[in-house]
Image (cartoon, rainbow, N blue to C red):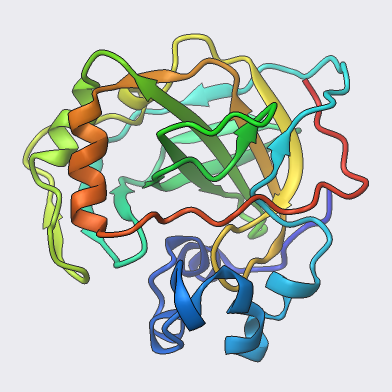
Length: 246
């Protein structure tokens, strides 16, 4: 997998999707600042247009592979919840890690998209979360979880109670929310090489999409979309020659 040569701090700024540079360019999900135009908004975003390993994708035509289980060492809590204008994001305490593809990645934050960005065999889901991790060499790994309509999600309920309604606002978490609360019990996954799904669309990101969806209530999805005011999903990108392993 191609490595992303970023410092830990730089990687965190990029994946947060809320850097000052990104905000200044007014990228978004519709109109002149929408995904079709990201590559033209700033020369730093050119990969959004010329990249060949872009995310999200439609996961299909799976290649059978003996994928090693992801080893989770999650121990921390969400420290604050942020409305950055592009997504609702929960920042995480330091020290929670995963071992995947022979490397250790630390969980930095997780955030939400509605509807889902990735699709599976053409199926879109009402919501998707991305758990963003960075290794010491700056390379990135994202665990994606799909959510389907069903029972209320307890972890999400705690987050949503403090969800900032105004872009740019953040709130310190009063409730204890663990990343594990939002993950499925079955951790089988699909794997592919991709990119950030927001500008600058940096490639070399290891993507691991959980096979088992988690339930959320219709009301929880509606609460999210009411705060965001718009869908916040980038359309699926060409798979090109990439294998999707399972």
